[in-house]
Image 1 (cartoon, one colour):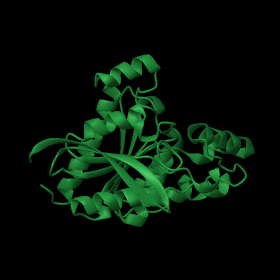
Image 2 (cartoon, one colour):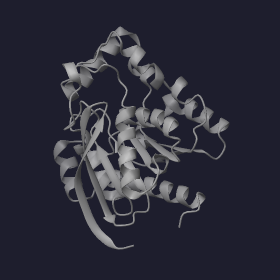
Image 3 (cartoon, helix red, strand yellow):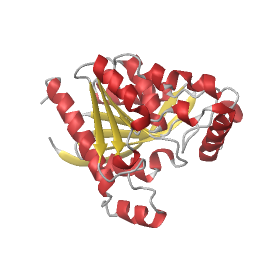
Image 4 (cartoon, helix red, strand yellow):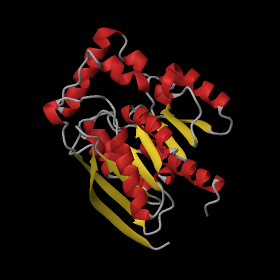
Length: 274
């Protein structure tokens, strides 16, 4: 494999909206194609966590990180309000772009989502028959939005990150397909990997993951990254987290990336890739 460095701005289209992304790789023939889907953060793909993760994964894979519509540099939904809380079309557009560019299928693209993005990735993985989906810090929306006050808090949080309104009155309906009882009810077509930081041990969602693992033998993994929180050290303090990431010394993100790399490489071996 010939080493080189690629950092390229990418423009995608989904449901008539323009999405902005960044493609990174150091290999002309990457070991895998990866799409990173961010959580609810104002900076979208440019948040420290996703940027640092992409920088580490690009050493072996081609990595596309992008902003969901309404987030970061991507186009806001028409009318200034989210008509739903469904980003499947965005993820499908990113997977298709990677598949077309590298001569593979969307199912071959590894989907990685964090927090809010993890629920969207798992839902999309079912539709694409993805061979590998990785959910980092999978959240339990039932716990977050219980009661109308919870819905309003979450809708306000989304608006703070995006400047786009989200109806609290309709939020329960929007989130119903993303509730864990629904999301993890049945086996996925491919392999599913769940990753948490040790400081956010997945006790609230552990029973759902264990139930999925019991039903789907050898198709579900759970990893806990030592000494890591939900944001993997990128928000401990702006000063410390920022300087650590600039120097590439954020150990929590490095451990997270190593777990993901090993998961992808093991999945490739099972599929007969060299």
